[in-house]
Image (cartoon, rainbow, N blue to C red; front, side, top):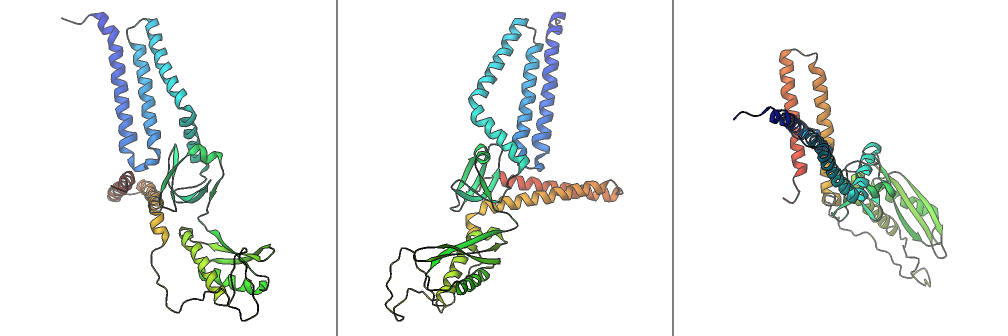
Length: 345
C-alpha cells in the first residue's frame, strides 16, 4: 500500500532532521573525540560538552518538526526546559562554580602541572589540572583533589620553577658572637648547594639569639631533600666547631669552662650516599605528569614546524615529512593512553 501524501509531508522533515543531526553527531564525535586525541586529554570534557550540546539542539529541532499540534509542541519543549532547569538548579552551586573557576584558571595559569604549591594546609606537586578540580600529590604520596572554586577563593603559594629560597632557623646563646655564627651558617648553606646564601638575626630573645640562614635553590624538584640537607649541614658546621645548639626552653647551669657541653660531633665513618632522593618516591606521579606535559609541548612544536616546512618542500620531501608527522602524532596518542591508565593497574 503506497504511503499517503500526508504521511510523507508530515514525517519526511522529521526523518531528514534525524538523519542530518545523526550525521553531524557522528562527525563531531569522530573529529573531536577520536581523530583529535593527540591534542591531549585536558580538553576532553570541553569536546564532550560540545557533542552533548549538538545532541540537545537536535532533540529540540526534532520536537519542532514532529507533526504535532502547537500546544503539544509547547508542552514537550516546556517539559525539556523544566528538566534542564532542574538539573542546572541542583548542580549550579558546585558544578558550574568549579567549571567557571577551572576556565578562569586556564586563562590566568597561576600554576602548571608539576609545580609545587601550598594551599591551606596542603603542600605538594600538581599532577593534573581538570575543569572541575585540581589533583595534588602530597609529601606522603597521597593524591588530593581540590575543587577549583576553592583554589580561586583562597591564596595559593606557588614555588617558582626558576628557583626558590629555602631556610633553616635556630637559636644560640648570647655568649657566641654573631660574626662567627654567620660564617659557619654560610658554610652550611654552601655545602647544601644553595646559591647566594645569607644570614639574618631574626630575634633577640630573653635567653637566646634567633638566626635564619637562607639560600637560593635552583633545582626545586629536590626541595624536600635540600631542606633536610641544610639542617644536617647546619648541625655539622656548628657542632664540629664546638658550638652548642639549645632550645630556648632548655635550662642548663654552666659552672665553668670544663662543664660537659651538649654537642654531637660528626662521626668518623663515611655516610652512605644514595643516588635516589625522597622526591623520586614521594612525587612520582607529579614528575611523570610534568614530563608528559613537556613531551606533549615538544611533539606539538615539531609537528607544527614540519607542517610549515611542507609548504615549500618537493614531493619526496613532503612524503617523508608526512610519515614523520604521523609518527609524532602516534607518540602523542601513546602519551595520552599512558595518562588514562591508572598507575595501580
